Image (tube, rainbow, N blue to C red; front, side, top):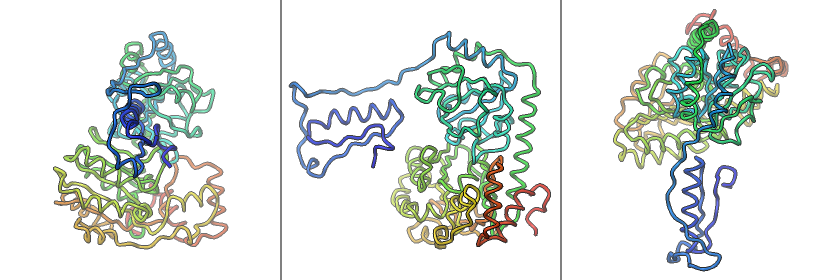
Length: 475
């Protein structure tokens, strides 16, 4: 059960093993940024601890680990600089490995006049307030990020294992440089010309003196215009009418209200689209989601962990109703048990209630050409805000877009953790940044077969596609 997600999994069989297992588990977890699991059988827990004997076949371990600073050799840094200096249209892709290298990434991007796209786990590595940050990449990504990758002649990847090759440059289109602390991740997503095994911040510090500042601004100007146009499009889509509330509006309206230093978590589902595209991260914020496994039910446990780690910071979890029913309602009981121990009670669970396993519904429509299968996709309408009130938390319910702003302010100012339940429209499509011919064909097939929500589906999609020319909230 644990082996797929943990770097170290061992079961203790004798008391004298425990010392060695504990030392190894902690050292592996710290050195690999990974999960370690030690299993203690019930009968072993009743035994007295014993030190390992000093005899053949027995080991005595010690504590302590200091992470090394890994920097590539100078000749490899020079090779990387030559590639980057030769490029006229440089694109940068950052992931979780760049979270501690924000300053260096900014300096490199400014010298290269590059645009920077972000994998979801690297969303907080750079703020979205920078005009050349194109936002997320991939199916949940932005048009500026897609254009950046399709038009660049040089690609620099920093601390990312983003796996979807169709959103990266065509092979032969761009020269590549990659920096990663894990050498097994180098050149496995795109054929790189130079692979640099090293810490992102330290490697960029060593690389920066070798990079020549570019004097031409045409590429950067195109990137910044694309970013401006995208944010305007996102606002128009968020303001498009829906029944009862456009889910994009929830994230769009919440974004500027988020306090400085806020920590945001997102679940896996359609809410991750709005988290990825509509939420603007500012300097000092933190955010995360289940980026590797895309597991449902992660947002509230992540938010609880964030609050224990940073009890004075506001924490907001964005959750779909499917994940709420899966396990997050039970996790609210954990919040009710512990919140009085936190120095600040500012903790919010924002629930997108659309009575649908929405991400899968849209994947069936667009990826497979299958209409919504109601028997598996419809889920019960549960009053999550009332459940919150039952266990001593604040419950807030919104089914009118005109009340959304006030509800968000109320949740952010509560004297206890709050569940903000928003009744959202499941027929607002999470449009990808680039719609392929196959996706368009599959969607047409869905309509030809007849979807149970056909009329609303067509209206919702049309509103999103033509958001820039259709009226705002009024029909």
